[in-house]
Structure formats: structure tokens, C-alpha cells
Image 1: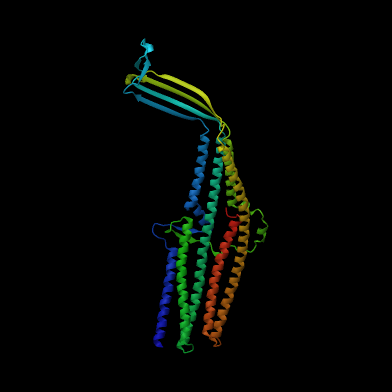
Image 2: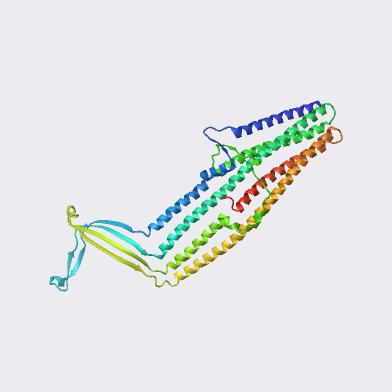
Length: 459
């Protein structure tokens, strides 16, 4: 009996030490700053703003916008004057020979070899071209602007996705902190109960099995706390990853759970029949439709003629002496127009137009389908949010009831009208209620974020 009690006391001491060390480890994780790092104290919005500036996905989407701006300038430049220069130099190691009929030399029926040209030749020239009319170019200008619009809307969608991911990760850390608080409260309560039970066992009031039963429960609770602490550390890592923050940086959360407003006032959301207009996904699909419209216009423009202005100036230099090559020049120049009129393509252009029309019809169908999908998504988000709030309120009530049941069970046990099993069961019920409350809290917070996204509140 004595040896068994000694074992119990040893287990208590080890578990208390483990709890104390875990608390120190958690405190060190939250407060100590690794060498060559920085410390940030952020609200959820500040975390989102940090992600907008440092998250690689957002940065790349922003670079796509800049690339689209250069694309517009590139496309515009193709319709402006194009000037190119040419230069050539030739050294005829053997001047070409041409055979001329002997009639030129009074010897009919024969050929005389004659060399035309000189040893050294050089040409310098400048060519100017300017589009006067090109239907594809006009459509291309519109398409480049639409491409920029597409990149800007993609950038917005990326920011929204990042906002949602960071906010959910932030809430997960807050919920984990709340879970540790509840676990600490249960550990402190169970520790007190364990000490009382051990004292009563020494006095012979309660049996040793009662001590063992509470000790097992205490061990499980301490182990669970250590698991939560490790999960909390991981949740911090996930949050920093979503933000694009280096893992070695120290992050302290400024917001508290009490700062987050969860309300039941979502009835007015169901009356909004144009929710889809607020969603960036719908705007992106509209842009896709516009791209297909421009593609159709471009295929139709292939039926139109193109007209270009051309100009050229060239200077030719020739001599048998390299030193005298550039002393005399023989210039030439011209200006003119070139007209290209499509006449017959064996049905190629007409089939391309038909294909473009089909793509446009598909994009119109996709737009209608997306509209219905976004409206349904908003309704689902509303239902999930309401259910989440009701579940959270129910778990809160169950938590209060479980605390009251445990309180009454302890009183009955102390007065000798209850059993230790009843107290253990009440303690287990409280822990279960706490866990369900934590899960309900996180689900409600996540459903709030999903609701804001579904109704286009996150931009």
C-alpha cells in the first residue's frame, strides 16, 4: 500500500514537472526572438496586409499586371512607324564571269567571257514601314487592354484567396490559445481534486482506486495539453507561411477572440439576388467572354485588306580598291504602298470564324452557370454560418451545464452520497464539452470567413 502511494506521488511530481516545463516552452516560443530575426505584433488585418506585400503568389500576380502594361505598349508599337537599317560588304575573290553572245563582238555563233562588276561592294540602306489599315491590329489593341484587365482581376482574386487563407490561419491560432486556456483550467481543477483525493486516501476515507482513476485522467489531460502546445506551434508556422513571413520571425497576435463579432443577423443576406456581381470570379468570367468576343472580331478582320506605306533609301559603293571604296556612292530611294487583299482561302477563314463563335457561345453558357453557382454558394454559406452559430451557442450552453454537473458531483462525493466514478464521468463530460466548444468556435469563425467571401465582402 505504502509503495503504491509512493508511486502515485512520484507520478504526480513528474507530471507536474512536465506541465511546468511545457508552460515554459510555450512561453519561450511565444516571446523569445531567434537571432537575426524580427518581432511583429499584428492584428488579423495587419497580417493580411503583410501577406499582400510578401506572399510570393500575390507578388507574382502583381508582376503579371506590370507585364500586361508592357504588353499594351508592345502591341501599340507595332502600329507605329518601323525603321530598320541594313549594311553589307562583299569582297569578290573572283569577279563573276558572264558569257555574252559573239554577235556583240562580230563573231556570230560564239560566246565571249566577260567579267561584270568590281572586287569590292558595299551597301547601306534604311527602310521605313507604316501600317495604314490593318483590322487585326485594331482588334489587337483592344485585346491587349482586355489582357491587362484580366491580369488585374486575377491579381484581385489572388489577394482575396490570400486574405481568406491568412484569416483562417489567424483564427486557428486564436482557437488553439483558447483551447490551452480551457485545458489549463481543467488541469488546475483536476490537480486540486487529485490532491484532495490523495489526502482522503491517507486518512482512509477513500479507496486507492479512486486515486488511480483520477491520476489516469490527470495524465491524459496533461498529455493532451502537450499535444495542443505542439499543434499551436505548428499553427503559428502555418500562419507565417500563408503570410509569406520567414519562419524564424517572431509573431504575436494582437486580436483576441472577444474582438471578433459573431452575430445572427444574416436574414437580410437572403434578399440579395445580385450577389454574383460582387464576386471576382464572375468578373473574371466576364473578361473571358470579352476575350472570346475579340477573338471572333480578329477572325472576321482576316477578311479585310491591309494597307501599308513603305519607303527605302540605299547607298551603293563599288570599287576595285578597298581604299577608294567609300569615296563615291550610288544612291537609290523609293516610296510606295502595299495592298494585300484576301480573295480565297478554301474555307479556312470561314471555319475559323465559326470556331470562334462556338467559343463565344461556350463562354456565355459558362457565365450563366457561374452566376447560378455563386448564388448557390452564397446560400450554402449562409446556412453553414447560421448552423455554425447555433452549434456554437449550444456548445457554450453544454459547457456551462457540464461545469455545473461536475460541481454537483464533487459536492455529492465529498458528502459521501456520490461516487468517484460519477465525478470522473462528470470531468470527462466537461472535457468533451470543452473540445466540442473549441471545434464549434473554429467552425463558426471559418463559416464567417466563408460567408464574407461568398457575399463579396472580401476585396
